Length: 131
Image 1 (cartoon, rainbow, N blue to C red):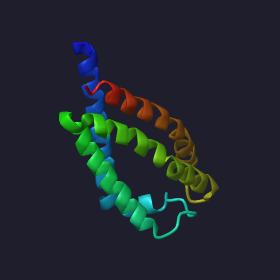
Image 2 (cartoon, rainbow, N blue to C red):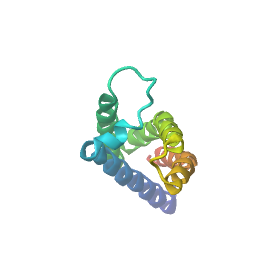
Image 3 (cartoon, rainbow, N blue to C red):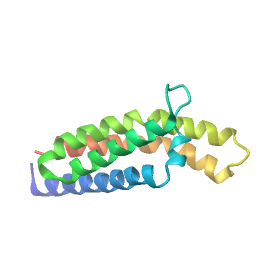
């Protein structure tokens, strides 16, 4: 792998790490927001899913930040981004049906759905180039 490719891969991994560490932290700082995005069809309490996904995001973010665990962390990040997609869909559906959300929030909740694609591809790139 070239030095430029290595630097680009490291930067992608560190960006994803920061994103996941920040999001994971928010699962504990403002859990009710995340609780509301848990698909109602899932069994059990929404808070459990919020906490488990928060821990997963923190662990994966840490793994991406450490060169020795970056390859594993990047693969897990790609899987996580796919796994949380149903929650993003649920949020978009709920917000679009609600009279309490603004038009901008509704549009934003829909617009964020395709963002999962570059997150997955960046994670896979970071995994492929982790060495």
